[in-house]
Image (cartoon, rainbow, N blue to C red; front, side, top):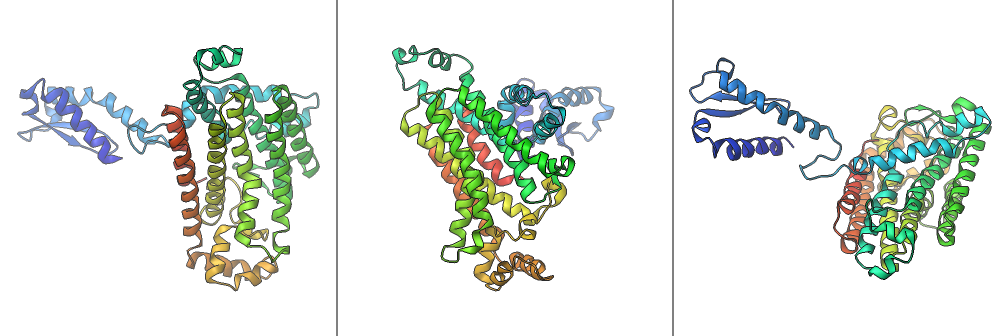
Length: 425
C-alpha cells in the first residue's frame, strides 16, 4: 500500500508538474514522509520551510494526501482500484436498517426491546450485503440476455432495466435474510449459554432464556410474514427450508459424537452448510429467481453463496483459536469449551489421535482443553482450515467470474470473498 501511494504521488508530480513546468521539477524534489504525507525540498538542500514556493507546493498536495489517508483506512483498499462492497450498497443497507423498526414493531415493549436488540447494533450486515450485491449482479447479467418484449412483461422486469437495477422484492429478501440470521443468534446464545454477542451482552444475559427464545421465534414469524408477501412459491420454499436447516444443523452438532461410523470432517461440513451456508446460498438463489433468471444463473448464485458461507464459517472456527474475546465480540474458544469439534481440532486429530479420547468425554478433565490447544498449535490444524476456506472462496469467485457480467457489483462479490479470508472478527 505504501509503495502504491508513493508511486501515485511521484506519477502525479512528474506528470502534472514536471511536464508542464520543467523548471520547477529541476529545482524541487519530492520527499516522502510518514503517514502518507509528502513534502518538497529544493535541490540545493535549502529546507522547504524557508522557501515560500516549496511551502506552496507542499500545501497544494495536502488535500491529495488526505484523500490517500482516507483510502488507506478503508477495509478494502489493498489497491487503488478495489471496492468497498459495504459502501457500494450503503444506501440500500441504510434503508433496510430503517425497515427493521417496522418489522419488529409490537405492542409489548419488553418483547420489542429483546427482538430489536441486535438489529439496533450495527454489525457487518454481511448477509444482506451479499444478497443485495448478488441481486444487482444477476439483474445486470439477465437484463443483457432478455429481449425488449420480455422486459415489458411485468412492472418489475421493466424496473430491472432502469436505475437502480434492483427489485423491491429483492431488497425485502435481504431484510428477511437478516431477520432469520438474528433469530438464529438469539436461539444459539441460549443453547451455548453465551454471555456476549457482537461485543455486548447477549439477549439471554439481559432478558433471560425464555424471552430470548420467544424473541427469536417472533423474528422468525415476522420474516415468514414478509416472505409470504413476496408471493413467490419457489422463494417461500427456499427460505422455509433454510429455517429447517438451522434446526437440523444444530441437532447434528449436538449429536455429532454419537455416530462413529461417519467421517467427522464430512459431518462437520454438512453441519456447517446447514447452520451457516444454507441461508447465504438459498438467499442468493432466491434473488436470482425473483428476477426470473435462467437456471444457469440461479445455480451459480446458489454455489457462490454455498462456498462463501462454508469459507466464512471455516475462518470463524479458525478465529475461535487465534482471536480474542474483545476482537471477536464473543467468547473465544467457545466451541471447545462446549465440547464441539471444529475443523482446526479435526485436522489436528490426524497428527495427534489422543485428542479423540478428550473429545469423547467432551473435554471434561482439567487438562483436556489445554492439551488439545497445544496439539492444535503444534499441528497444521489452523493452517489447513484456512487453506480449505481459500479453496471454497476460489470456487465461489470462479463461478461468478465465468457466468456473471463484469460489473462493479460482481467485482464487489469477489471482494467479499477476500474479505471473508482476511477478516479478524
